Image: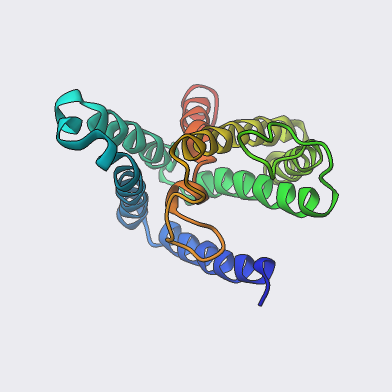
Length: 212
């Protein structure tokens, strides 16, 4: 099975697992994002921990990363709290936009990407893929909330791409290809969920201030 096949198979299992976590209710949903935050921190620690040595906890960097990741994925718990209580559809909206952006960028950028955005940081990212991802995310937002809200998908796509570049820059500086080996074809938790770094908090704030 080629790279695309492996990626698709394990990606489908990830989708089913996350849908199950959302459908199971607020406690399972919160535990799911909490586990991802812990796993993401562990990946960071395995890379940066040896470099920091025994001063890691005294400098507070490990705590800062832990609080940051908890805030990013903890915001998904906030997203799920609708006016009438737990609402998994609010979470599914963000998940759908981010994954649509990733999928559209991959499907368009892989065969058609010619003009690289920032090859020194992320050689695989192209302007063609970026456009494909933003259009896919906008389509998901338009389908969910009406085409007047398609801009939200494009905004989430841009934030997700910025998160991707941030994590890629970290990996480049550390000389690693993947943050971990959590999911075949997808790398580690930080690789798979880097799109949440900026998109999740921004989406949570948007829903709290202006959303339903």
